[in-house]
Image (cartoon, rainbow, N blue to C red; front, side, top):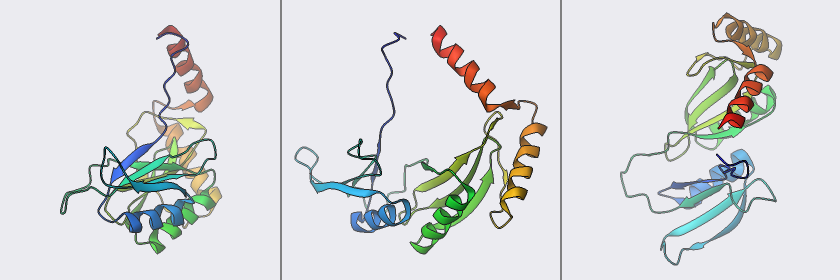
Length: 181
């Protein structure tokens, strides 16, 4: 890959049934701001664009064009937080806005909650850990535990995995692979 070629994943779109309900969920739970909305010209459906960043017009686009009865095709939509308290806050907000099937998973390289949004799209909220283990990896997570207990359990899980590396070492290996492409 040429050194100047560096595509970055920037946003995603979801086909939905009820755009107003979905706008309410994503603005209330994740603090996204509605940046634009309207009916598309070449894509003649109601559209809504949302972002949490002033340098990105939209990180999430919604289109009210999901056929009645169609199942979600979203594998997962992930939001990153920095602390366990923020993870707990996301859990409380999501549940208050109608999220279902809430569950916690400890991936050792990340601590996550998963739920279904009001239209049954899978949403993940996670925070990184300073460790790497091969994925997929998922142990139960109980966010009612104190922070120190969660971090101690996460470190124990990570170091027990034969693929364990400190995250900095994994990142250095990743960068070396990128340079060799």
